[in-house]
Amino acid sequence: MSTPQPQPGVMDIALYQGGKSHVAGVANVVKLSSNENPFGPSPKAIEAVRDSATGLHRYPSTDHAALRGAIGARHGLDPDRIICGVGSDEIIAFLCQAYVGPGDEVIHTEHGFAMYRISTLGAGGTPVEVPERERVTDVDAILAAVTNRTRLVFIANPNNPTGTMIGEGEVARLADGLPGHVILVLDGAYAEYVAGYDGGAALIDQRDNVVMTRTFSKLYGLGGLRVGWGYAPQAIIDVLNRLRGPFNLSGTALAAAEAAIADADYADWCLAENARLRGWLAEALAEVGVPSDTSCANFILARFADRDEAEAADAFLQARGLITRKVAGYNLPQALRITVGDEDSCQRVAQAIRDFKGAA
Ligand SMILES: Cc1ncc(COP(=O)(O)O)c(C=O)c1O
Image (cartoon, rainbow, N blue to C red; front, side, top):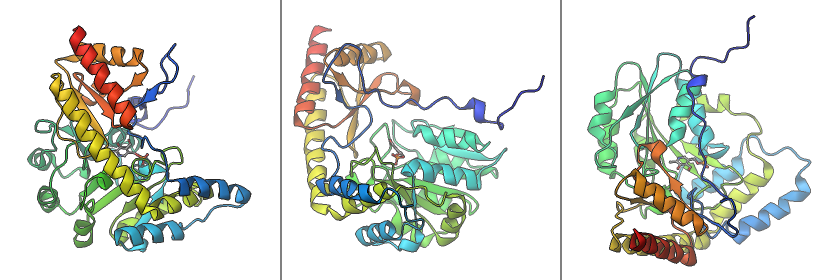
């Protein structure tokens, strides 16, 4: 008997593993597993969400003009070359849908974000994983992996889960080394955390084949509403908009994102707290023999001796209600990714790891 069959590639997708949010039998957990802003969204975004409730019977804007205008104003970008999506995940999916098909290759790095592989397989393409150099994107390894079947190259800068990044010169060298038929996607989910970094915007203005993805899920604390965006050459934006559902973002999500990006003072305060607590936490862990690379984002990748020790530390933390992220699925079994929480959470994590190491 014949049965329905999915398209090639779909059954090769391993389900995305999100950060845990519960521990059986432990109340009052602190979730440090999904790189969320521990301070939540701007109070102005919360107010905008409340205000949006009276308009829930209306369809939302389909062109997102107000939000694109606000993003353009904040970042000095042309709003016509911005596209908004249901999280930056949706922009990643559009890129794969539009430019990748069976037989095509998509390059991502060894410890690259899971959705690059998932969206590639969903489009019928072949993910190609290239090594990093000591948990840092290796431009030469990427360039060496390019073939005439390569369609996209994804790098997150800063990268998740390593927290490391490459400089603008290296990004430009990568862009220069790619053939014209390959799109370089600069995933800037954590770009806001890097002072003075434009996420690659200037490079995009000079090239036909460079795209940037960004999100409201991290610094702006709106992961629950799912708002992301992309910035690209006009020809690519025109392609992606053909795939975008006309009402992909709810009115509530649009209103919240507009209010969040307008509240620069709140974002700056969150950034300053993150930088202060990130440095403090990294140092506290290093003092007890748990190193991490200098993080450019809102998490640190704490490295233990081996997989066993990382798993034991994870269990120890969970028993104290502290949920971090195991990253064996990112080829980092010896590490735990820890979101930088508020002061109290950071102190609890540091104390728990001190106690864990002391007890070992
Ligand atoms: C590197 C990177 N890219 C993209 C995303 C997707 O974010 P969102 O779809 O919430 O915008 C994440 C989320 O964790 C991420 O870490």
